[in-house]
View 1 (cartoon, rainbow, N blue to C red):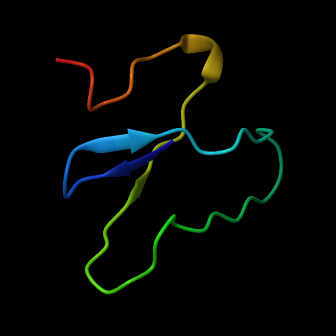
View 2 (view 1 turned 60 degrees about the vertical axis):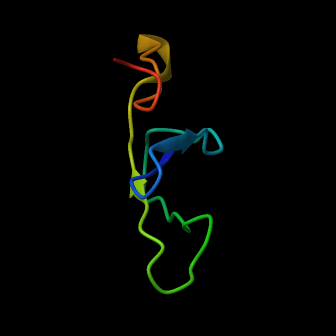
Length: 53
């Protein structure tokens, strides 16, 4: 998923396979828009970071 550290929100990124080369494009690309791409195993069912307390 994509995590926006400016406001603490997260959104699900499209699902991908875990093999081979992957290219990711941030949801927005304006100056000052910082995004963190977090990769995790979907089967682990971790909560989004903005929700986990």
